[in-house]
Length: 329
Image (tube, rainbow, N blue to C red; front, side, top):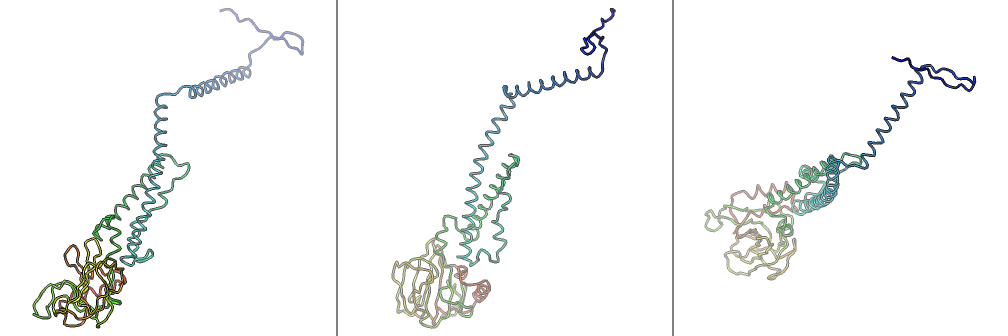
């Protein structure tokens, strides 16, 4: 193998050529420079490739991100609408409770209100949160809102036996007593099988008998129109009576009146004085015979008296109404 020729370098200080000897420091520095240049060149080449060339997986991910962004906008819109719907439903629930059951928003039925409460933290989308988690959170919130709305409608159907479309007619329900300050002691006879005061046999008493002095004001139990009224001098039957149509197949009848203060097809407001109590017709004593008829069938009027009467008073009336005694008509 031929010997390597020595290399010389001109030294300006000594003004002469000197032989170059091998240096580990110079070799390491040169190697580091070449490696750094190669690394930077590789990084630049990759960045250029990412900017200039789009791979198939990147194209697919781009389309997916675009679709997700559009889906997020749709979800946000639906969530806003659902939140408004939930607020409307909760307002209707509060109005119904206050109207029919005298249960204000801050009343005692905490469990009922908690059934319709929404965890507000679930409705908040945090900035910087992963998009997939935002979508899951919004979907969960929407599902929760729809579940609450469905349960609310189910409660209306189960407990009030009406559809949501029937809500306007609920305000016409005969939900108050037909006299002021109804007490259990005034409820002489209730709904169901009772003893007839004339032939002393059992018969079905289609209403409730409320003992009153003659001339006591009789009130309309709910909004409606006078569908029928009658004056009678016969000492049998209902005597002087009024019938009010409340819509939704519900009618109330007020019998044995002394005086009638309304006319046919007159619009009636709840609590309006419609007549004076008496003992006309087949009555053995002054009283008001009050009936509620739904779809042609008599029902217990006490089940509709929920406004203006607290739970304790209603329980007393219910107990008194179940006593199988003698009626007054």
